[in-house]
Length: 456
Image 1 (cartoon, rainbow, N blue to C red):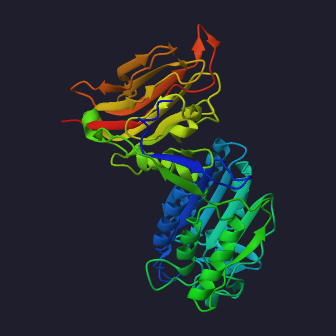
Image 2: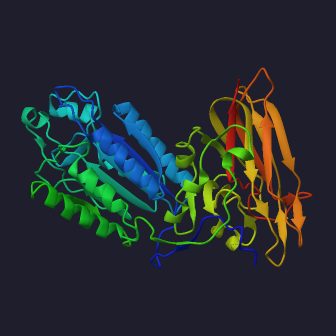
Image 3: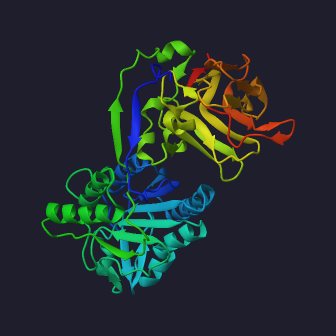
């Protein structure tokens, strides 16, 4: 066994026998900028940012929407349903809302920015029934639905409209779902004196506790908020029909091993390293993989995914130990690889978009070695630089590779743009067929670094 080249850490995942390795998608909305008639709120936007960051670290693919009006909220909920369906039948969907919320005649409502509420009829016209959130999750086929409402903050509407009550009314149970609220019926949720509400602070803190069951997490949130507010605010669960108390964040044990000094990342390829793959928390997932989208968007160069095919496949960051049991890939700068899973034995592809035209885009392909008895069979693949019009600017191809007893060396693949037009997107294609006959059920794309050189 050739172990000297293993970079960084060997991750040993420790989790309950029913720990979830399912896809996780989340929508986070924080509404602060209400007019004086509703009462502007100081913290919901920052609360939403805090929770979005916590969810990313727990393996969720997160969309964050600040200060949304009614149309924007409905559009975001529709996207949540679409993302849930695209994630697959075993997906967990989560919705977090911070902002004004109210109860009228036992119906719970979320209040968008820009709402004008002077009467009970206005509530139905300008607000969104909380039950609608579950409708979109169910339409998306979520295996588990989690709704977290940090709302019911003090608003003048309670004094103007007779039917309005503080706090939320009970919600009917549906499927495997949990509906948590930041305060009990008849109480107000506090905005807090600092940058975040007591509930958001406690929730983000408990989300970060590895191995803690989701029901235990909300119980500890309740205890923390009661203690901080001296009993003035008590969080609750309006409904709970979850089938198991699964860990919200997987527990990870880390053993650091001796290693040679890594190669300087900047020296490997021209341009700026778009994203340090080594910092992606693949260890938070039971299977050593996390959805790539959120982490591609928060690097030095903002990259986004599009056109992922076939349907049901996912572009992920995978820890090297999760790839062929660590017996085929020898990383150079990161244990984490960008790859595509659930592709089956059909052609697969995805596209990375760039925020601005680039002169060069480079990729580091890791070294492969035949540690397994059958050696390596590496499907053919190609990568294509695209212009703003979708035209091909440059293409690099690797044919089907098979090695018995010999390594396939690491390689830096560089795509170049002509002087007059920059690269705005890069498409990856992998074909597991040999003479039209499928021989593999995985994507050939394995990337451990991306560099981008801007146009002069």
